[in-house]
Image (tube, rainbow, N blue to C red; front, side, top):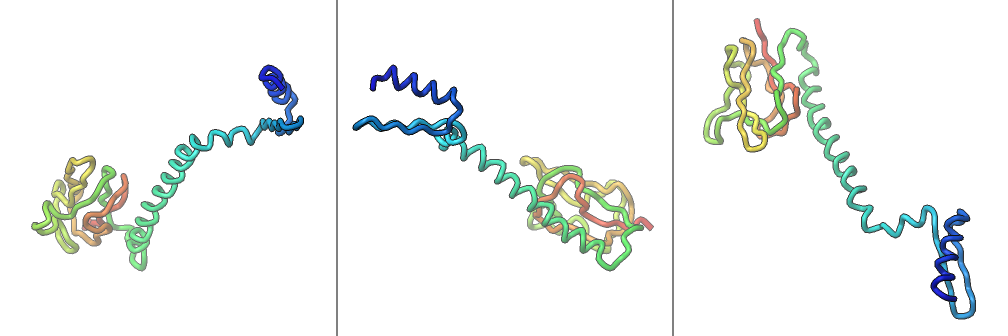
Amino acid sequence: MELKEIQNLIKFVAKSGANEVKLEMGDVKITIKTGPERHETNYFQQPAPVSMPVQVQQEVPQTPVASEPVAAEAAGGEDTSNYIEIKSPIIGTLYRKPSPDKPVFVKVGDTIEAGDTVCIIEAMKLFNEVESEVSGKIVKVLIEDSSPVEFDQPLFLIDPS
């Protein structure tokens, strides 16, 4: 069988809609595959795009799962409706101290004024101070030092009275 005949056979099989055709003529064996199995030849190109969304899906649920127990602790057993939340203005890593050898900015029981720094959030190597918008007493710290935080995640509960 000549190359031109093989090419014509391939075109004929592709147009016919058949998934696989096997042809044996003496010592010559030809198998032509089309359809869904044809994509398997791109095997080395598929894993990268396929694996990336899987990794992203695995990372995304981890952060909400980590923050749910914190929210459950805040709601568990006590009435928090009269407290005001200080929430994270950005995504990043929360630090409760200005440096490792210094004391925390605020702790439970401290009285703060509007504009007082309550923590620092590091995002892309920039340290952003988080200031209280209200005056009051720190009732609960909802996040641990050096923990990742999401945008709008509650950080502290304040009793404004």
